[in-house]
Image 1 (cartoon, rainbow, N blue to C red):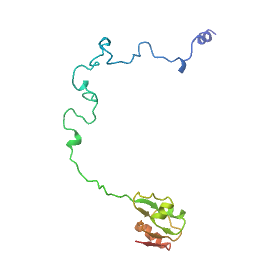
Image 2 (image 1 turned 135 degrees about the horizontal axis):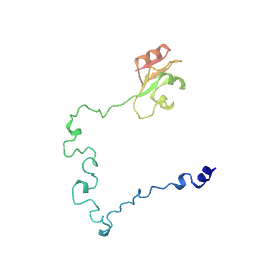
Image 3 (image 1 turned 180 degrees about the horizontal axis):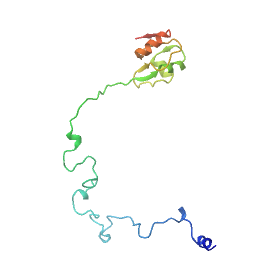
Image 4 (image 1 turned 90 degrees about the vertical axis):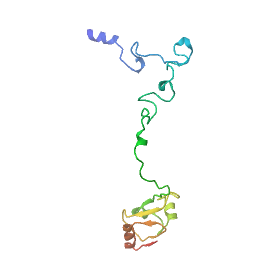
Length: 160
């Protein structure tokens, strides 16, 4: 019974009564507010040097890729390769996606209308994924060798 009376006087911890331990929370440092504050003029950064500059935290911090005056690794390693600015990636269309199309013509326009490719995002290419249930006439679209064989086996035609 004595334990119950002690428990009644203690309030449970909850979000409504949380507060930091005394002395653990300091006020925000307000710099550049005059000489009386002790943080006026140079605002506690001293005179000159990397630690006084904006945007650079001195050694080990601040500017990314800065290696203390040493030649950065991105400039030390040799540059190799080439990126073709005119490369066009084909928009892939699966063979089994053609079964949902209306009509037997497969052209860039019909693929755009069926929302299988997007207009102006590169050429379309039929790949050998899935089965063909009916005959299609494919024209103006790239076709893989396996897909061409399946289309022709189903009685379709591929025009170059």
